[in-house]
Amino acid sequence: MTKISEVQLKELQEQEQSKGKIINELGAMQIKTHSLNHLYSEVMEKQGETKKEIEDTYGKVNINLQDGSFELIEENEG
Image 1 (cartoon, rainbow, N blue to C red):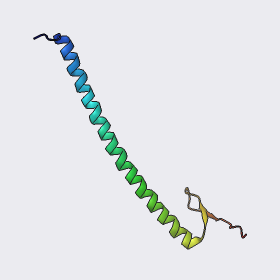
Image 2: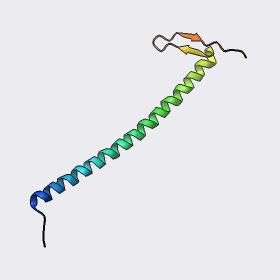
Image 3: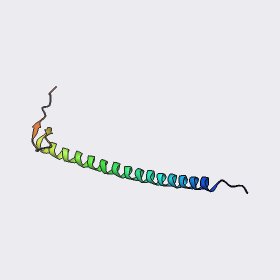
């Protein structure tokens, strides 16, 4: 049986290990991305609920997130 050199075999084995590590990292990143997208959606939903509560209490307002002050948004009557 004919074989490739030990150096070539070792190089191929190391490359294959590198590929495996990269594939594992990509999979972990995909899982992390999915989790972060889910968390972001939850925050957006909660923020929408909070904005609705504020609007129910104060009407439509622009809020300064630094100090909590707000200005009423004037609605044009058409």
